[in-house]
Image 1 (cartoon, rainbow, N blue to C red):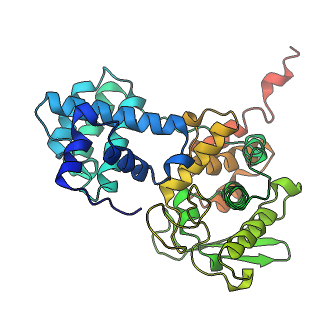
Image 2 (spheres, rainbow, N blue to C red):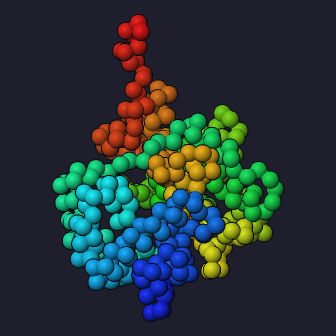
Image 3 (tube, one colour):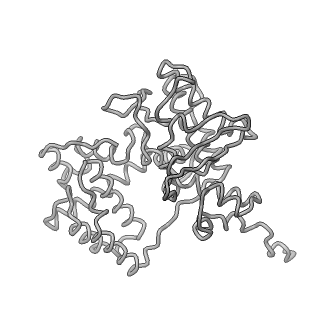
Length: 353
């Protein structure tokens, strides 16, 4: 995600309460904060970002504090002011929005400061603000998501649809984190007689940087086959670059503008990489289009959905952990492995009801 260089006038427009949600500078900044082009963004997501930022800037002005850049003291004062009054989920989302806007503007993120993190931890303890994990996407849900993707042959619809189909199915079948999906290069995914071999160069829990190799088999249904979807995206990408698939190199998943061109809006370059934030928004946007509530799903819903569905279908917990690269049983079970097993060998089914 590229930083936005703001002029003094634009900075005033961004954090002036009277125009914080409607000025061009703010609209562009919030779009960039989300890491995705405005037209390709879920309406509810854009509205939430605008609402969050307006609430923060309005409070900052009333308190005589600067919203952009905000100091860690300002952030702590804001969180303390509304802790208990706002729901934990809402306050957490507004905290995330503040962080995203600062990073998008090329400014220091106050949320990352030690004092701000300690303040948030204290608020969570005092008000029992427990993290609310996103819901898992089951196989039937993923089928709904890919089922509404554009099927016509217009360049933009075909290119965008093929990219999102490959991203969703590969993310689900390989239990990938959004950062891992974004980091994949063309050469990290190779063909195999049994499907695909995916090389995860680095990940959140890979402290030694040794990487991991994942085998993704062919799907039983052609419409839901991650291998077929990946081949389709590589063909579309090669066509957009006037190359043959074997000539491709660089990032596997790339941003696509509202006009169907590869690259980042306002910045040329077909070698641009889709950001982790954009991966999250792809999932949310496709959920909304499929009639699922985008507020309860995120990119991690693909990974947790893998664990949930595999467990529900009888997969051994140890095998689920190994494939998903979970090192802790407690962490793996927190990703709905137990939920997937709720009705497997359930003794309540023996009550004769």
